[in-house]
Length: 184
Image 1 (cartoon, helix red, strand yellow):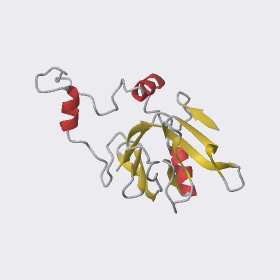
Image 2 (image 1 turned 45 degrees about the vertical axis):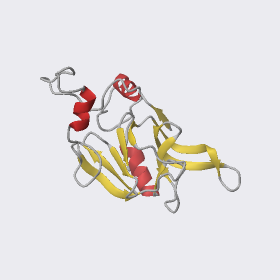
Image 3 (image 1 turned 30 degrees about the horizontal axis):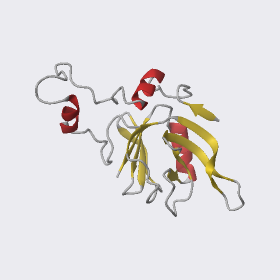
């Protein structure tokens, strides 16, 4: 089943409305936790809003490299991922494989865009010429970058591969519009 941004089939409340999620994808709405306090303005004389946000210490989920407000976290250097619920670890850490040289997994903040339980790659083929399976795909970045089941024995082409049980858990847990943070 394919789910596209805007259709919510979740057992927990959606974190973003369709319009807010679309605006965030376009860069017009900041992620949760990045707003200035009510008594601060963008022109308060001590620098731009971006500079204030960059200078503010990030609230990290304990034991991880990712910020509160994130739902899925990946540490490329540690080959590890987590799922968070309300700023606490809900699942993980689990082992992952990420992209290699020239096909790196994109570092930064992303949103879950769509899901496909039985996705097949249109780019990669199996040895017998069939489209490569990408079970339990959760797409979060341009270029078809997703969490999905696959081998951890080698680098991916940019995706975050998980063992089968972990891929199923990520697929079930993550909802459209959820924030994904990829760190170095």
